[in-house]
Length: 477
Image (cartoon, rainbow, N blue to C red):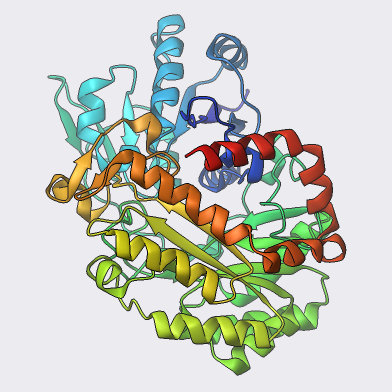
């Protein structure tokens, strides 16, 4: 007897900047961790499972749908962000046209946040997993993909066609009990999933997630899937997971993608100690808050192989960012960058433009803060009010919001705060990159990557026409 078959699809969101290269795919292709974990749990429970990742391997709907149907699935699942949802919905609709009886299940941050709206507007969707997917999806699969009020964590239509929700499911507390993500289900892993250039010393490399949930309540962050409780893999689990990646796939560097990797200092200290003892030859990047970084911890992290730390700055004006996030401490960030460099680690600043309350002065302060504080690299996103974020419901009070889901990917301008025009914000966005990367210091910084991250230079040269096209677009803004 054959195992029940599930096909999991990661749709491709579109850049939607006319005439511009989609830098999100050129610079960084991250493995779909949610689907990988779901596939691993499904396999453990006796299901056959495939992952179709359109982000790493784009395909047209006309080409994709026959391929999915040829796999004879018992159900098809989609995990989507806001910008990727329309593409996923189009695929689902085409599948339903060909096989009306095929169960279609959606999950992820966007469907979780507005499940009722999607069930009313998209008849091809049979059920939505609201929140964490592993336990809810598996129970639904064991029930023959027939949702009911007895199965927690599901939204669906009742007999009258009305969207209903079966109730929230308890969050998974012991993350170590989950299997390793199903890396083997990704075509071309790890080569097909490169990190951003100049963000790693050696390859193969990959992205690694070590925790779930966030205790902070930033106005622009969607916590609807993993909640406000910080849960994490143990230090021992992490090191053994890295050992698996090193032995199985030759991984040499990992990007720890957690927003809160440094939240539990005791875990970080134990992780670094275990990693040093394991001698795996694996380096890592992480994201952290400045308050967690003291000199002794940074020295230990450097010994363990920390190569770069990303700091969430958002704005160079505390008066602007203060209402939107907890502990906006620019002096603390300045000190953290100095300590990071003293430990021999690179520092990357993460910034945001167009925050509600933004002014010409605050935008200029953000550019100056990035330039004057010694960051080795920087990333600037455009403020995007996602449906699950606290500010979403009141965003119209702060400026003009154009809710086009395809464009809501932080690189398109969908929100213009009061006092600005769209053209002026685009100009400031380009100015940030021109002024930050056009300095002699940055030219020397990247020249040093010839021996610190040689593959990055090879990738840059290989895709030079695309990078130059993106730069010309910024200069024209």
